[in-house]
Length: 216
Image (cartoon, rainbow, N blue to C red; front, side, top):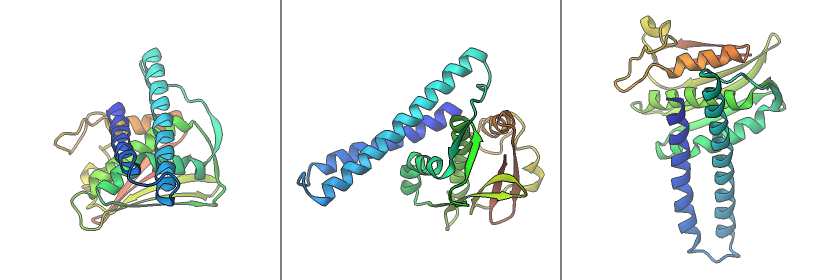
């Protein structure tokens, strides 16, 4: 499930780059349009390389311990992290006409965590949010990073129709799912990774949205 989430994003981004590369051939090499397309292609390739490297590393470590890889903690900029993450999901969001916004307060906020494992957590939660907004008129996903009482939080909010409150406490249980083609693994692994990162994840819901909150 985790591998397919990442591969799906990589596949969409690669397809978009192929289209951009073909499009670039119609512009003179010294034109502004050509330069902008080359920048988009370069950024996209960097995102593919970064995520595929992280995915290979994830799988190799997973095979070694037959479990979630042990985290390797470093301190990194959340602004840089979110810029790279957005490149990874941008194509799918645009294809599905989903508005995506993110804020970081303060803008220079840094986090001590495992960047690759956190990226996997974000992919899982944003994928859930994408599925949640597919059938609603206003499709919006918002990510907020903030500091409260000395802790760093990340809130992922979607404009979907929410989760049944009876199911809210069960969504993190392995193999529990309300989706026809769901595996029931994604959120349980997400919580397990967050525990590995000495954090936690909880969910809140209403008829107009669902909020997943990461606490570090």
